[in-house]
Image 1 (tube, rainbow, N blue to C red):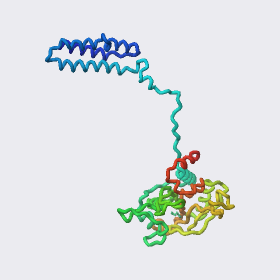
Image 2 (image 1 turned 180 degrees about the vertical axis):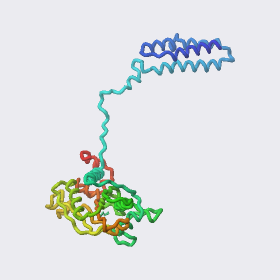
Image 3 (image 1 turned 120 degrees about the vertical axis):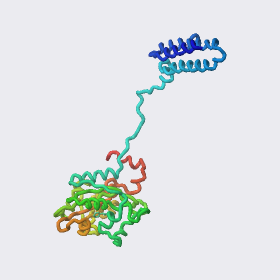
Image 4 (image 1 turned 135 degrees about the horizontal axis):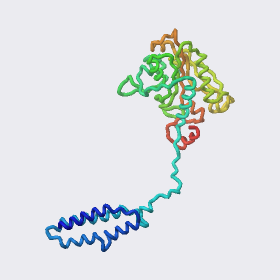
Length: 342
Ligand code: PHE
């Protein structure tokens, strides 16, 4: 029994030290250890000499040795002729699998463009939370609790706290910027906003805005007009004309809505401009003095303008998309049409 153990140990060492590099060397190993006259058979035959009371232990030893010798052979099977491992090698001359590249979302393409234009005009980007409190979304912006303007924006409130809501415009970010108390301010605030609207081709319960705010000494309505004119000519082309119509927002005075000449028909009348020649694109105005006071800014010294536009609206004009729902349906047939624009 002892001599059998010593023999198995010695052979185990020898097997481990044998590292065949070619199929001939592997075959030589097979013949030497696993062949019909091989060493494994020879050692197994030694079982006969083992006394009966040690046969069980010897059997386990011999079995483990046999498995080791076979396993060693298998681990070099890639050297065998016609081995299955060899056949699994990839055909490197085959063309790769088709994986179409993703595309940027049209809203993101347009938002990036808007931001890029305003950055060139000296505006920085500010962002804020989508879950807001009443103060930043309404009250600080001159919309106290009973202000009728709150009816203009049906709001989603957060059930846990009546003071929390999903922001209805990114003017809330402007409130947060003003709160920091650093002047002058020149920011653009892109982001998602929420309103309690029934979803249809023309309305959605969430959409995207880019709002802007500029506050400094001696900022006038002429600055507002010039900045927005520079924006639309960059965005829609240098022949674009603009017009301002008086409007009302609680946070601006005076307030206006800005139209651009129709980018599809150029003014002669089509379905985009509803045959008026003009398309409305944004709301704007001079920041209301009361709002400046809410943030401890002296309206005698400082003035400013603000504006807000819907990114979906600008995208609709730019790409002739006539159903708002397309933006959030994730239909690849829609999205891939913007590949060239990203
Ligand atoms: N906050 C307004 C809206 O969501 C847009 C706006 C911003 C209008 C700034 C005027 C000035 O409709």
